[in-house]
Length: 240
Image (cartoon, rainbow, N blue to C red; front, side, top):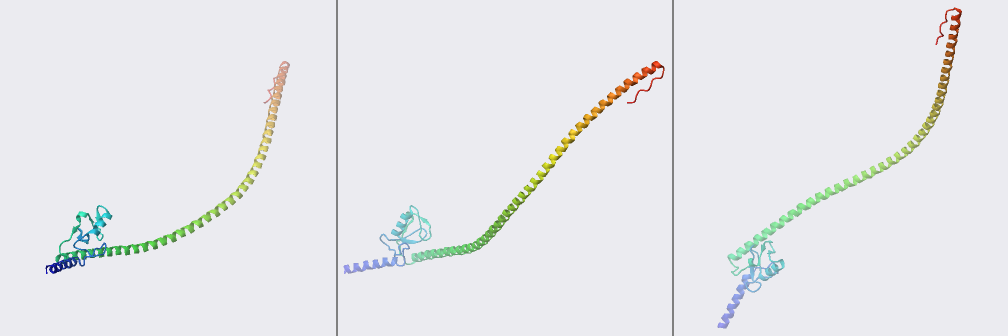
């Protein structure tokens, strides 16, 4: 009888322990948590529950300070607490409330991220349209630049042709002017020689006039003396 009663009690405890962990799935290994052993149900300061062995391994992978796999709140190994109370009743309601709150916050965060993604997609679409417009403008500017480069080349060629024609025309004019200057130089040289010849003739005429004047003065003086001795009045001196 005692043996039967003992087995019945152990079966009741096992069923109660299984009932305590019923509904609590470890989010890491996706298996039911237990109220005993390595996979004992435990909770973090944020309220999320895990199997102790799973959260311990998670912390070892993350380092000395890990983060909750669900809400990313930091925690240490000393912050992990095992849950020994019955999960039924107020504790279960509290856990369910915390889980519901976490789910709500997670959904809200997901909705916020989705809204941001939608906003960024719209903004990206607007930026893509703007980029297309700028690419069209860039292509138009490149076409204008090519056209201007072509006009510059044509004008350079025209300037070179005009410069070549102008150079030949100026060269001809310079040749003509050189010929004219040479002719003028010869004329000036001839005129200078003629002027020197004329000046020589003028000087010669001056000496001749001076000689004639001196001879006239001598003759006048001699005539005056002769007339003086004869008794006639002296003649007037010759005009210069």
